[in-house]
Length: 160
Image (tube, rainbow, N blue to C red; front, side, top):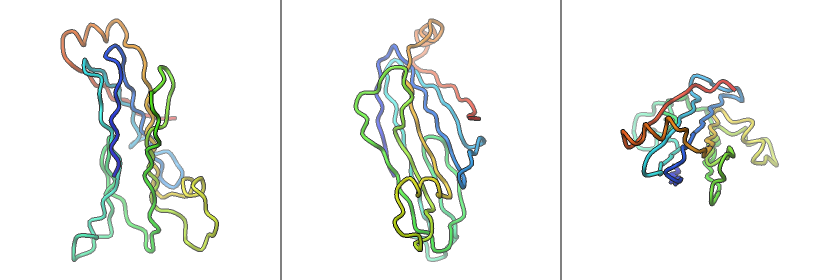
């Protein structure tokens, strides 16, 4: 599991775009765009997986994927080779630029494939999740809303 703290100026909003791919195809039902704004300007993102078979005497053959975009279960593959969760260090986030901040790829290709690189693991993953953030100025209406309440959050579907 990875956790990431994102701080941004209180006069800005943070869009968190989560894309879920299953066998390389975008799952628009699981993908989302959430817009956060607050007087504090701080959000926490998380991404990870949990294998209950590792702690239970009765295997279920399921794996839980969890994170800021929501939780869901997938079937474990027989002979699964695992995967990775990456949170590249980004430093200061530029205003108005969509930036990758977290990625999960689970269900890598069979070990018979030699010389497999990170790009190939990403493309061949059973489940791949990318989390991008975009920091933008608040609109006048959003600034007025934050004067009345300390935060807002809107969620949107991702089709692209």
